[in-house]
Image (cartoon, rainbow, N blue to C red; front, side, top):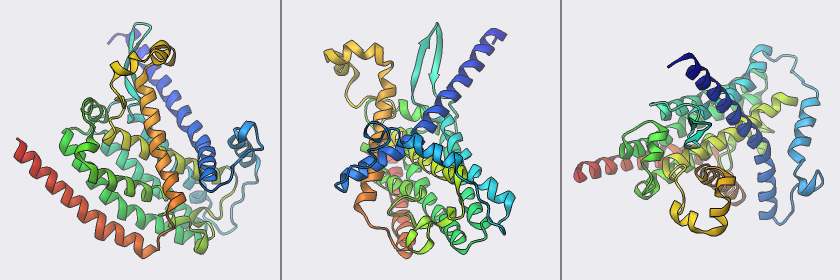
Length: 351
């Protein structure tokens, strides 16, 4: 590779990082608006309406408010750990997007450009490792605040991660057995004709439940249960440090949605055949204007999966802690192990 090609490759990589970072941060802000609107309509109310048309500027107003809000550190808190904890939660959530394939390669100005930052041959392990690291930020926040409520929220989050990382990993193993690769790009390309959810519906359900628990969302939002913990691990935080935790939460929810789309829902592969899509006049006419339709299919799928988070939150009440542990250890893990056994038997019999 010559110096010119190396420079172009480096420039394209940096541009990809900027685009993915901007996409993630913008989504982290406006998914809060999306959630408030969806929840409002589900509960027969309108949600944000006064800041901008239909409340569209509400995330911007919230960001300005948090940015200028007083940053308070408790007098007896461990200041270094207290300051580091929000970054420890946010940075791994953003770093995981480096391996998410938003689409296939495209040609721009005579150069082939990948619609992902990098294609690691251990992409699945990379994502799982970073998702585990994010829990340290919550644990550090709970411990460093020197508050019993914060500490209990941090400990709950730690036990929740331990309980639900295992069934999530086992559900993913079933998919890897079918695809034979840890690369998210290879897994996506292997679903051009039939999506993995057809072969692994049980693994998909397990992954969905574990993903909701991993992101501390209702009905598994016990680390921040206001009934008994006020707000849990972030009760002592204010200003932008408080915002970092919620940015990390929504970035993790979006990441769980991205991985679900890649592993089970075909990734960038279209919902309907591309030829049929292009034959529709209105789509065929504007296809070039919209860019590569593969990216739009991917985005539609992740927002549809994200909608499931909101639907479940509006439908199910919060579990008790013993129910949370029982579901993970006594139901999901045995079912996931049984699914691996059945998958292995089918693979052997088919071969």
